[in-house]
Amino acid sequence: MDILKASTDWAKAELFSTPFFILFGLGFVLASLGFLNLGKTEMARAYIVPTLVAGFLLVIIGIGLFFTNKGRHTNFPLEYKKDASAFLESELERTEATLKEYNTIVFKAIPIILILCCLIILLINKPVWRASAITIIAMLVIILLIDGTASARVYNYNQQLLSVEKSN
Image (cartoon, one colour):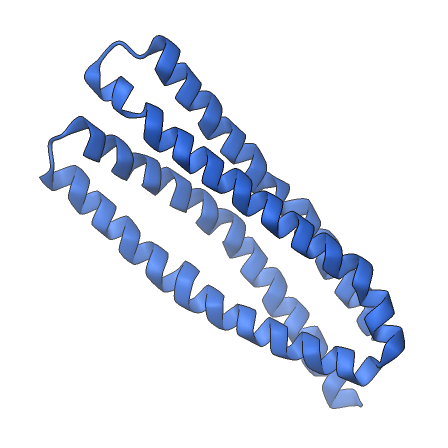
C-alpha cells in the first residue's frame, strides 16, 4: 500500500468536508440577519445574537480546519520523501491522538452539553435562554454530523497506517 497516497487521499477528503462548517456557519449568520429583520416576537428576537455567534464559530472552525489540512496536504510529499518511516510514525501518533480527542470531545462532551441544553429548554422559560440552548443544539448537531464522518475517515486512515507499519 502506498502510504503517501493514503495520506493525501485522507487530506483531500478532509479538505472537502471542512467547508461544510463554513457553509453552515454562513447559514446561521443569514438566519441571524433574518431574525433581525423579520423577527417580531420576543422569542424570534432572542435568536439574533445566539445564531450570529454560532455562525461565526462555525465559520472560524471551518477556516481553521481548512487551512490546517491544506498545509498538511502540501507537506505530506515533502515529509514522506525526507524520511518515510518518521512520516509513518508521526502520522500514526497524530491519528491516534485525534481519535482520542474525538472520543472525548465529540462523543462524550458534546452529548453531555446537548443534554444540558435540553434541560435548559425544559426548565427555563426565558426566551434568550431557550433560543441560546436551541441554537447550541443545532450547532452541536452539525458538528456531530461533520466530525462523525471525519472520525470514521481518521479511523480508516489510522488502520491503513497500522497495516503499513505491520508490513514493514
